[in-house]
Length: 95
Image (tube, rainbow, N blue to C red; front, side):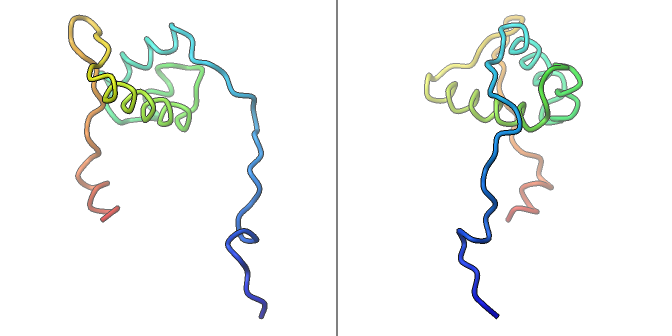
C-alpha cells in the first residue's frame, strides 16, 4: 500500500464563516460567563449567545496570553477576571 505523507493526510483548511471581531458587549458577557461558569465553554456559549464554544475557547486562550503578557487581568465588579486552571481529570487524560 502506498505511504501517505502528513501533508496528504491533512485536509485543506477552509473558513466556514468570515472572522468577526468581538464586540465590547460580547467581551463583557464572556468575562461574566467566565467568572460564573469557569471552563464550562458550552455554558459560556449559551451566556454570550452569539459565539460558539470553539470561538469562546479561542478567545479565552488569547485573553489569557494577552493578560499574562501585560501582567494584569481585566476587572469586573472590582475583582480581576482570571481563567481557572484546567480540571484535574482533563490534566490526567492529557498526561
